[in-house]
Image (cartoon, rainbow, N blue to C red; front, side, top):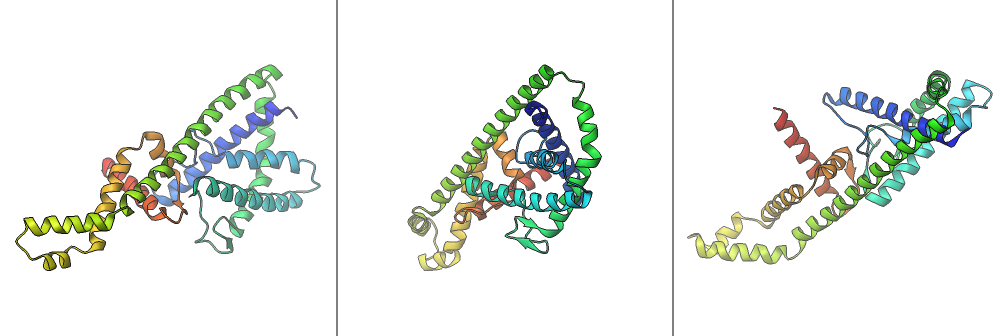
Length: 268
């Protein structure tokens, strides 16, 4: 099977996966939810899964075997992808922790069963039409289309990877801005307040606690960080479910919620 044909199928199945995820999540969340980690309308994990399904399962003897292989294969693919992305970007794009029979929130039995049926649907229901779609193209035509898809996809991956790396840098810098010398800044704040306000120092310090001061600084730093983010970075942040980096998972989640709140207010 020609590699250009496989790559075209990879992109087209990625687009179908993005449509499915976006429609499903938008309905369940009752709001538009643009799924996928990349800028373009495709989810690569669906493309990879579908192409592997076609390559590995086409010669299997029956639909039951296809279902089992796809169920097991999807679990391996999902877990490996989730683990790899988390190790590289400290981020989570899906989390099954709320579902039964899950493993570290990366995979769960109900979803793996669903992907087993999806593999069966792809192989017997969708792939015959997908093959008819690409069959009229000549070898040169398929190679040209594959190269075009590859250029767009590679640029998208590069931009997204850079944006995610920059988000991690910004979150780390935000945490450092909050933590470094915060006690000294708090004491300086209290000292200034002592000179400017008639209340006694002890009374003022009792009313403005360290936790309140830290919360104020956190909000201010989050605002500064978000103002420094470009559109691609905010798009990447919205696509995440959460961060699992211990030092800034809370900051990342708060920034994501702030983005959702700002977006909602703009619509209202």
